[in-house]
Image 1: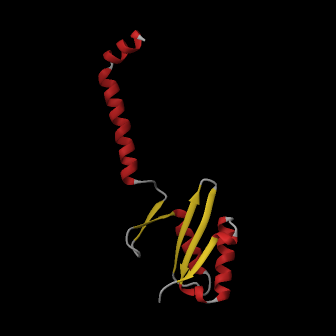
Image 2: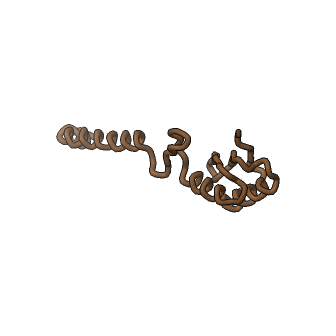
Image 3: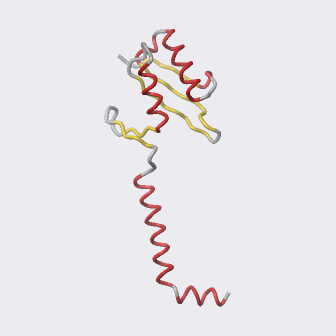
Length: 120
């Protein structure tokens, strides 16, 4: 134990610099976030996951959906639920298409998907 304390005392500057470097890296990660968050100019500064962005893109290509917003609730074992708000949710066939597409894309049960009509 005495050898360890002597070593730490003699290399104090290196230890302090190492600790500060680790803290600086952690701070940079917290401030700038991870790469899978994407900022949307259309809705302000909403951070969306890459999966949400892809799902919005796919849904907007389905006939009748129109403009869509998506929120994915991720849990420990994957996706636990999805909320979709879109212009075409008033049409029962469009809702069915959305339900099938999201269930297939995310490999989740249809009971974990909620679809709502967007305000006009």
